[in-house]
Length: 253
Length: 379
Image (cartoon, rainbow over all chains, first blue to last red):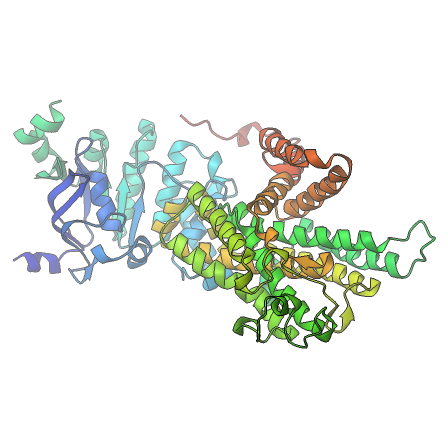
């Protein structure tokens, strides 16, 4: 049964446990993301959202449990960050991190899917196809006008978009997006929701971790609620919002 | 592919700097060798050698800027690569002495005869050939950088911890080279050189040629470094400097990139050291001293890190100051150097060249004020 589930999934986490110095960050977390699915993950601070992302992207190695990718064919627990990124998992951090002293377009250029070896990059020449792709991505994330500017001059919200643009440039199969609307204005939040829906509509799987309930509602997708390192509830936003367990630990507070 | 790669680095500043360096490389030897001694334009040989020494320091500073300025690796042990290149050259020069040494042994350098050694240690073989020595000048520092850097970067040693272990590396080498049984002349090092590829090292012509070669090394180092910095790889290095884990999650192997640039930089430092030794006439373990590596960091900081041209300017300016200062108030030089470092950090954080280019950029950006093009305020 478990393996049948895994074989139809894009991302498959089963009974993942992680502890740091005795603190149990994940206590048997299981999660299945199907190909082409968009999922929102919510949960109070310390629920294990970021640790879960760390396990998927190779930053943290789980003590126990399985983390499988692409129909269970690839075990992610033995791979490093760069290898996992090459497999097609892109990650956006909670705090926007872009390359501040590069221009906006160079940020996207560096993220473009291409050979990542040092000799390939040493002699690399920007091709017409790459330039067109950069234009397209900058249009998508509303930054075409600011392409020649240094990334450090962007506003907070624009940095978040640039980072999403960099994710797109990697052409990942799965995007992990950690709190994309933290610190954004309401208008920017709605634009970001539209942007993520558009990315999802283009056939990519997206996992969004977010605190902002209005934003999650705007996304209109299946929601997973984490609490104390495990899954508390799963379903539509209305389903989880009316789940008494969720109300008690999260929404009720 | 290679020409395109090299040409990409040629922005206007680099071209001007290259032309200046090449002009000096020709002009100074001409003023020394062709202009008669009575003329006010004559450059005395001691100055040629002094400038030649500065040029090798400039190449070391350039090498350091490549790792520190562009990849954020603050190496406090780059003097070790410089000294290793110097020792490789010194070993070649020792083998050229032949029977002209004090003990007249055709094979063994004087210090080995003095220590009662019967035969040449294995690692001294081959150094009688210039080509072999020249290869070792880049290979030995490169290999040390590969092993040391590879291990450190793979273990994700960064920041101040990396600085400390590079410092420990050069200190360990200092202690090792002090030992007589290492076979590198111990405390006294290698000296009493006679000739290099058949030319007397003391001759004016040889000194002028070594000066010109040192300038050419700086020029070639600048051209090559500029090409690296302007390539996509150079952009990745800056990305690592600014946001290392972001670079990793985009799929770049950070350790590989750091090791690559560390090795390239160590090789350039080795070449600089190799040109330094025949000009000053000696190489001893003192060159591994941690203070030397720290001084090199100060040259880069003063000139402006991450500017490539700045470190060259910084190395020349600080060393010219050092020559002048140690002539007037020798015991106060280290205090002056320390003060300089503090002042530059406080008031010129971008160094001489960084500050000047900022001023130019501001002047260029100032006139066309377009209210619609104002950056939008962050919320």
